Image (cartoon, rainbow, N blue to C red; front, side, top):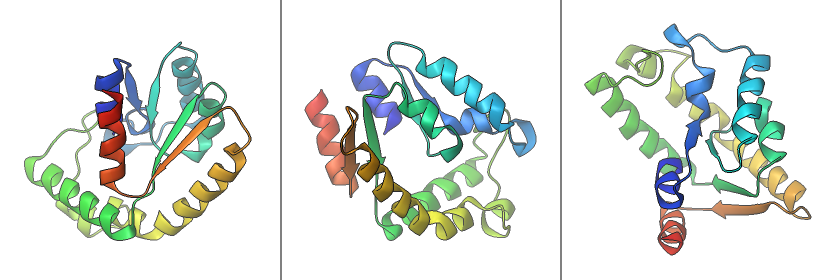
Length: 158
């Protein structure tokens, strides 16, 4: 979504994962991550992709729109499974030399699939709360329940 939105609007996008994950899957300290995000959102235009609660406030300070892909558990799981298999099979580099592997993706508590399974419901509750918080603000909150809705919105922007 962020790549497509970036292309349509001609605005640079940043994946928070690329800032958070250091080489060898080390985690960037939160204060450093927050500072990097503050620098990004200080620009006139920006797109940030990710759901890191630790830097949500930094993003909201200068955001005009929040797009939340609130897809069903099954949709998210199947998309993530396909992406993870592809990345593992092709040994695609993600950020800073990091790659997903079959062993880490399918046989580890550090698995992105396990993370999704254990956090999906909590993320949905957080989405609901964020939507309530932003209801009376100047920030436009867009919530897409399925890929079709998101694709239609993107088509309308072109």
